[in-house]
Image 1 (cartoon, rainbow, N blue to C red):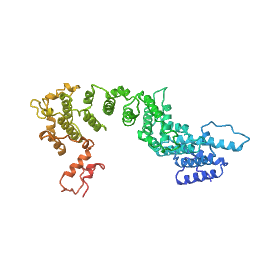
Image 2 (spheres, rainbow, N blue to C red; image 1 turned 30 degrees about the vertical axis):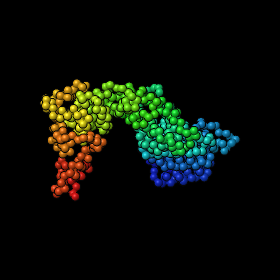
Image 3 (cartoon, rainbow, N blue to C red; image 1 turned 120 degrees about the horizontal axis):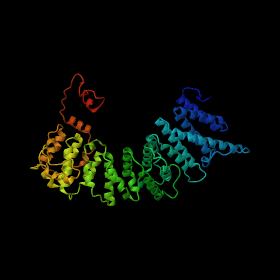
Length: 512
């Protein structure tokens, strides 16, 4: 039987038939490893699949099974697989044959690594899985006890850190292996050597991939208690957190010196806030970076604000202009970012003190009230609850509700364009914006705005109940609040509320 491989063929067959033929060829070779042409034929077929970007999963599974058996049987010594090809010993055929097997194993492993660059994500992820499986098998059959195959690991990590394309699918698959303590430990021993330190700056694709790698191998301190959770070798002296922490700080120092696009900057800050802060020796050294990030605007500023809050809360950082920065973040575009809930949450914390100047808090109240006129409905509810809480904390601000000389829309003394909240003349204004919202088309918004016309509650509103409300939630709530007597049209409408491509509005026209 011959494999379906022909250099002149226009297409390489795939499917169950090919998998069956490859498995049969592998079994024949394992039964008699002297049949060298069989292994060569399998590798040539794999090489042809790579060249033509054909499916490679059957080849990967076959080679994984074949070389796993060879390593377990001792035909291949893992300790020697990283060495260069040796000159065959003419007087020792057995040694010659083992050297030949090891040379072809090195070739096969390199081809598996090449498979990680396959254009189809499923095939590339399968190549990563095959490489990690062989890495684990090698470690279990090395002559030296407790020796992790770091050369193989570095080869795998280097392949994932592409400079041309984003390999999110590979890192999603790598998370399966990054849960093991030994993989985490040896990754951190390797990662600093993967950072480019000379030549041209790394590409954005490399930066994204590198941050995805850090995200995969960063861990909480409770992870160190899982001493038995290993993929390859037990950590004899335990998890050396001191060494790993040193590597984390060293690596982060390299990353901070890169020039960041907005997308990379956002990814970097998320990683810093969620996983890196707890491992840094001197977090206060991030002060300048976070302050510069506050000036970027948009999502980056919101994330940087959270970092500044951590430094203020946990490391006694003093930043006198933080309220001016916070004030400047409340712009119309903030309602269209995915971290707007985080901004309101942080603002609520920053403005929680009852000892803040009334003029400062009044400026935030007026700015939010003005923004509520152009905000989406779900955000208006958040703003109204937030303003109500600020008035409860500072009872003197009740005079803003019906200020006798506060003016109206055409004669409001409040200066929206003023960047300094203390100079915005907010205390001289009134909350006519909220009074206008009492006539909002949505009953939920109009009802929320009536708090200024009713006695204020004795306790603050819980913002967590409204921070994650979406427009769909409001839509469904309004639909459920209507009468249950439906007027059904015989013909489906074709106008504004007709079929909307499966959206929520079209679903409401289904017959009950």
